[in-house]
Image (cartoon, rainbow, N blue to C red; front, side):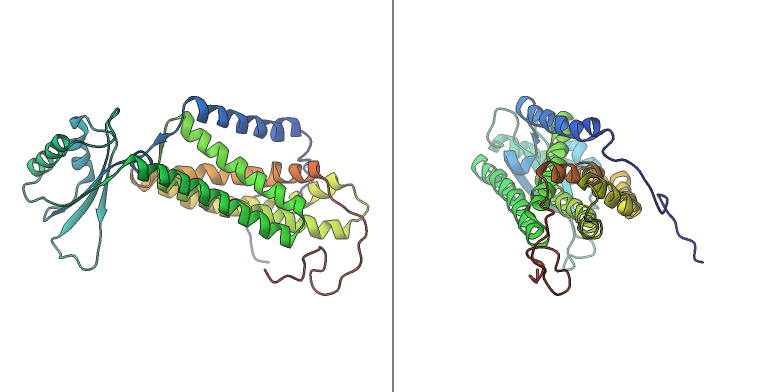
Length: 326
C-alpha cells in the first residue's frame, strides 16, 4: 500500500462548536477591532493611493535597488519604490528602472525643485544614467483608484455570493461571503495596526485571498450538503461537525502546501513583493480558520430548511438550482 502523508488522522471526532464563544466570538471581536483600527489609525497608503511621481531611468549599469534607495532616502521625500523593468527588446547592456516617489507630507505632489534634486542625485550616483520619462499621479487619480479598488472587492464578493446561492442555498451564500469578508477585514486591520504600506499590490492580494478562501469553504459546504441528504434526522450542528472532520485532512494539506510556497516568497522574494506575500500569507491562515470555525457557524445561525421538498431528478438534484450549468 502506497505511503501517504496525513496531517490529520483519517477519522477525527473533534467538536468544532465546543468553544465557539472563543473561536467564532473571537473572530467577530477581531472584525470590530479592525474597523476601529481603520477609523483611528487609518491605512498607510502607498504611492498608488496618495499620489506621487514615477521616474523611468535608462543606464548601462546594472540596477542596484539598494543603492538607488539609499541615494534617494536622504532627500526628504515620502515613500520610495524601485523596480527593475525587463523587456526582450532591451539591449544586453540596457538596464531600465521604474522609481516611484510619493509626495512629502503636506504636499499634493513633488515640486519642480525637488524633482531637479532627485535627478541630480541619480546622475551623481550613476553618470551613465538617463531620465527617460517622468509621470505624476495627482490626488484626484489616487482617490479614483481607492474607489475602484473598493468596487472590485465588492463586485467579487457579490459574484461569489451569487454563484454559491445558485449551487447551494442562500444561507450558504451569505455565510460564505461573510466568512470571506472576515478574512479581508482582519487582514486590512493588521495592515492598519502595523502601518504597513497599502497599495494596489495589496488589493491584488486581497482578491487572491477571496478566491483561495472560498475554494476551501466550498469544499466544506459540498460535504455538508452530501451529509444533509445522508443523515436526514441528525441535528444540524452534528452534521456540520461531521462534515468539517471529514474534510479536515484536505483543508490542512492544501493550506500547508500553499503556505510553504507563499512563505518562500515572503522570506526570499525581497522588498518589492514582501507586502503582497505577507497579505496572502495572513489571508491563507485566516481563510483556513474561517472555513473551519466561521462559515459553518454563520450558516447554523441563519438556519437551514431541512423539510422534504418535491423530488428532483438528475445528477446533483439536491437543491433548488442543481440543474443550472454554472
